[in-house]
Length: 81
Image (cartoon, rainbow, N blue to C red; front, side, top):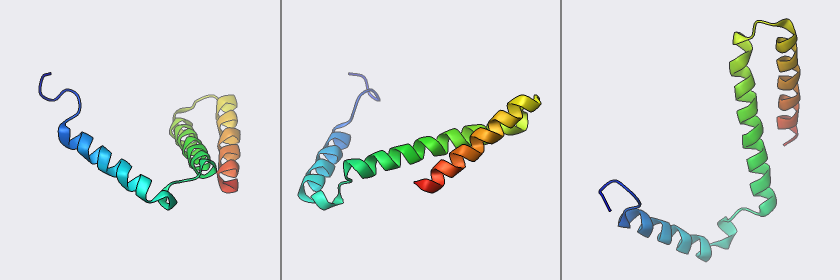
């Protein structure tokens, strides 16, 4: 395999070491509920960032109003998490 392609041995060893540490310290793992909550939060944050990016560029009043409503909804949902 050519240099620069695939994983290096150091990367694989680092991943193996991290897996060993996670098995040794199960308290450091996130519960499935916590993982879902963090995933949901990240998804909402990305959607909100996208809307904030689009708002200054919007020309139509109806589209702007729709984005403002969506922005308010996302902010409210983020507060609940």
